[in-house]
Image (cartoon, rainbow, N blue to C red):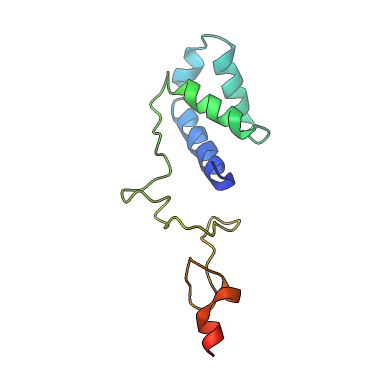
Length: 115
C-alpha cells in the first residue's frame, strides 16, 4: 500500500474507532483492544504500516470495517483516476503542466516539442 493509501487507512480507522469507541471500550477482551485504542489516541503517528494493517484486521472482528474504504462507486480512489505517475504530497495526481496529461510530465510532452 502506498504512503497515501496507508494515511487514508489510518484516517478511516480513526474515524471508525471514534464512531464505535463506547463499544470498543466496553469489550476490552485483552491487551489487543487497549493497544489499538492507545495507538488511536496517538493517531497512529508512530505506527508502521504493518501495525495499522494488523489493527485494521483485528478490529474487523468487532466492528464493521469496509475493505474498500477509499474507493468511490466508480472504483477509483476518492474520485481521482488512478495513474502511473503517482500523487503529490497533497494527494493530487501528478500531471504534465503543458497539457494536463496524467501519462507524462512536461519534459516528455509532445506539445512542448511541437512549439
